[in-house]
Image (cartoon, rainbow, N blue to C red; front, side):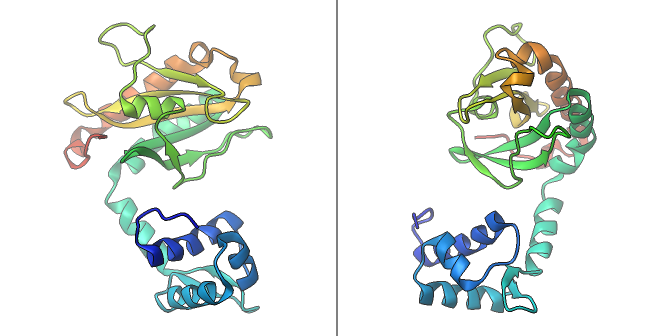
Length: 232
């Protein structure tokens, strides 16, 4: 298991939690060991410690599940981040108007974190899990958060950025920035879907709608924007 924080035991413990997240359901110790690559004894010790803290629990068959303490932590995190709630109506409208998946990203160091993900109703769709940490260097949302601008956009206007098959084959996306009153980028709104539906110039298809949604969210933040740091 690769080290992320240079605190080995913490990285391994979080790896156990992430393994359960990926599996999407209960897991035996053997499954956790396979997913994390940890020695059996280490996986067992960490799972036991996480269970003591309420971050893991056991079901009736003795399999591991994510613990209920994570619910309280998730609520506390959401309460401290009003942007996701404020953006909700505009994101839902954007998903319904375009018929494609919609995401809200914020910058986290040299990466971007998906804080809201709404899935398309199409059988063939692009899914980004909420909480996923993705690179800044590729993808339209990464470019928005890194400060890239669409050269075809009008000077001084809120612009969209598009990408086609940069991070994943067959996927296109369009993103636009959410701005605070000072014009700083707080987050990025994205529409993503298969190239066969969005085309190789997805900005022409949905760019205006994405920009409108981003502007709507920016406008709703006048009462909470001072609590939200700009992306850096």
